[in-house]
Image (cartoon, rainbow, N blue to C red):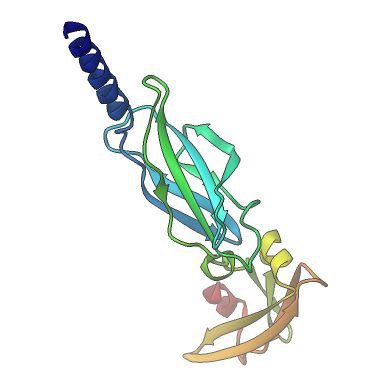
Length: 201
């Protein structure tokens, strides 16, 4: 009877230890940020942690299997670049993060991101713009969007606005990025001198 009771107590303690090891708080605020199709997963460390490691997985919406992100296993940082595995703009994706403790071999539950679409959720950064003067007026030089944007879009429509003497001028450029890395557009501004150009800048 004593041996049976001792065995029961040992099993109970073992179960308690296993349960305690699984009680790590999961990461918080798991979400994608995407600029120019660079898709990065971010998260916030649990408040009760000091030195945790993280594992990241992803899957395509509608698929059953989660896939490991090989470059984001056992990492210390709080972000993971998933651009290479979430590059299909026709798909939707999920990602999840798990916190682990090397000291106690314990793990947290998986923390899930909202559904993410590279096509709809990415933000395109504005192009680089330079303004120069000419006899005809001003020349607006626009540098092409970033490389990933050029790969995703064969053409981009640019609207260039200039405000001069309280009046707005607009030029519309439907520009094929497959041909050039940028373009120039001319606007004639009556009475616009170098001083005017400096004020536009």
